[in-house]
Image 1 (cartoon, rainbow, N blue to C red):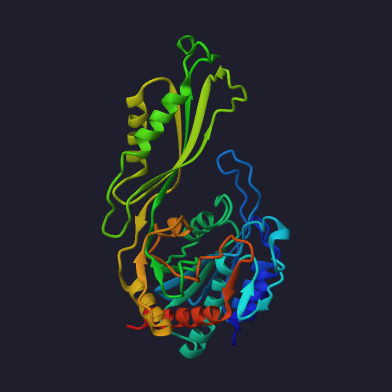
Image 2 (image 1 turned 45 degrees about the horizontal axis):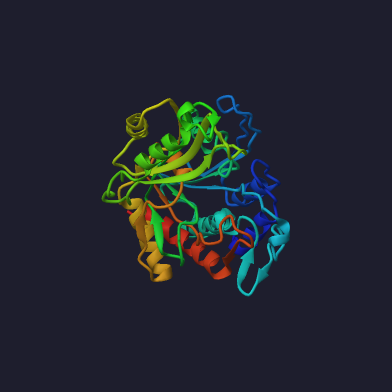
Length: 386
């Protein structure tokens, strides 16, 4: 069975699968892989997410074969909202091709990568003639762009309960900054989302000595955190960073000193830190300023690294064979579902160019979609070749 990665990409983009809606996208994936002989399991999950109301999300786990090793492709069919429709020059879900580029929400992130892998897997299985001494699987979620409560993490729990093991995983996120072949991700930085609230006492701006202004203390705490410098990076990671994302006082009066002030900031950290060690450091920096404050810290991801090895090396050889570029092995960027999968097996991420992901008129080059299918096909050859 031959699969055209462009036509499957267009069919997937035509499904308006904005998280948590599936809109038929997983049905298309299931139909395509069942035609190749994959056994499919649809896995809808609904969980409160620790008290936060979230909607049910559908997921798919599909496997060809029962042997070991089991190499998995992980991805997501859900997409982010389109924003203002009037800003788009193309139908966000029309899957139009113009001047060699496929337009639509999910083109870059990451429906085309799913289609490319299925097309590559079809060629690989056809060449293998029914057996290659291992297994292929797909883990496709509808909850990557959302809360990530009822998606990949839940599927991995189901797999463990049902005796499904992974030996390696390729995640199809758009990893390339400028050109196909630029970059393979072999890890990701951790992420802390922090809210800092400083308490004071309201008063008249003409009599600051009779009030307790929280704003200077908030500024001092933020400066103590932002200017310190966490590290200089490590072998595979860039330096950790702090980004202040908002400062809020909510004071409409110029002659009133407010009673409280708040700020939010994000910390992206490398493997020189843990979430616990950074949390302790952040509280110490605030305490060094003094005064009443409350610091709330949410951990959205831990830093992790899959050291260069068989998986990334075989993927890199495939990239170079198709594109002529030697990809950088990187840990930059945001988080992905690889943060869940890394606890099960080695993981590497490679997909299309990330430039238009989440943007108006999101798109991918048709030539890149076809080249990505070839890369995945060669990566499978390299992984399963003794």
